[in-house]
Length: 139
Picture (cartoon, rainbow, N blue to C red):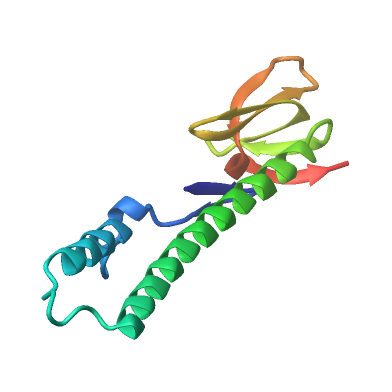
């Protein structure tokens, strides 16, 4: 997930690009079911071992839910930051190095992130302005 901040770009690592450092939840479930399926009926799995493995599974699930929750909070925080910019005067850094000053008149949320609409005093509307292009915010 990519989160933009005013004046710079912040990114988090894409989970698909991270190396596989261990057993995934699906791997754990398959291993656990295989263990139950192929256990020796004369020597069944010890209850304490079973409970330990079940607790590990629950721990993995809780960690997964916590990561999802943290990602949702980061997205909400980014949204709050953007809504606060409505009707504010901002300075936008352009691709050619120049800057333009105008009022934030619109916000668009898309899969590419948050994009602002800025209306300079000249009246020409700038669309698709990224948060990373904002260099100054004034009331």
